[in-house]
Length: 273
Length: 273
Image (cartoon, rainbow over all chains, first blue to last red; front, side):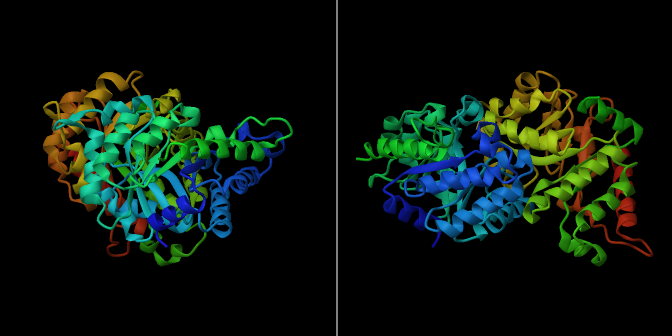
């Protein structure tokens, strides 16, 4: 099953547009996992097990593994996810961008080594830096469009022929790059009006939407701005607000993650229309 | 010594603007190194030893290691380079781009894990995605500006207020982002006129220039367009043309790499003025 079909099936099966981001910062782990050599694997497996029926996707952020030299733990997490929850898409958040021959190596990293269903990529180097990923016909390519950080405007909001650069990128991807129906876009939740404009440009193309939760984006405005006519079309990501949820009462970290993931999924669903 | 000073010293010491790119594709290795578990380390060490007096920098491309799960070999190569040739800058070609907290993780990867003197980064997400690298005050941050691939024009050549986007990026970096004098730019050799325009914008800022050798850029036009008044200011990269040079006569691969590196350095020097 290809990425888009798998994503559609996960939206339905779990009645969820919530993507759970895995940004493992060992300093924020529970004490008993902090210094274990497989601490990141155990932490992420517990989060995955606690939220797999609430999520439409999981999104490990490779930078957190790379900083620690913990690629082997990322491999183990990806293997576990694919074996245990094969119906939930695995998105590798890597934001790679390089010329063709090198992009091919990054595609091997994402798709062959980690077995990701989709990978995030950067459009600055143009189509021939994105095309190599499309050789994996059943995988998804999620192109950065409008990012949720303050500095995102530095380039993305520049006027390009009467429209901001991020809208030009949305059009490029929708009208030219998405030849095989493998593409999606990253559009941050911090600018709901801009999310609505991208949705108007790209039809039903899936949008990966970071910026709710710890980054402060408003769920109602995000869902109403980004949903498709069918009330789906989004992978709304929350990472830190879920995986580092403050335990209450007798909860452990995984139960706390489940509670916040449930609340977030339900808050999203309240506005899908 | 900080990156810019180290680069200046290497330009002088080796009378060279040549950056040797390490893109290890094991399929192109000599047969005796192809299947060794430390084959990449041995290959790269041999290239480094054969060219260290001819280069102003070495630039490993991390994608080739990531595709193979060979980060440990990249670590070994970086450790060898820093220990054996501490006067030659080590540039990690990673082209990372992500928001602040994640960019900080990528900076740890480049600077703490691999000990790179400088790292390449992508500007699409704006200044707050670049600034975290600058917390390492003695390291360099080399921002993508104009890339040498055909698709580079898709975004970089868009008109932004009367100038192409890549020139806007050059101005942003030169006038705003380069607060601490840590920045350099990537500008491809395939468009010498554009290289000259970037040089006019950024003064003496160092430029990392890929695209000669296997990518076909013209050395004379590249050097004349990109040099500073002092006849330096560039790290002109060649990867495949050097590391996979065809051996002649009784040469082995490292001797062939040395021969082509010497020819390339000398061809560059012939036009420094």
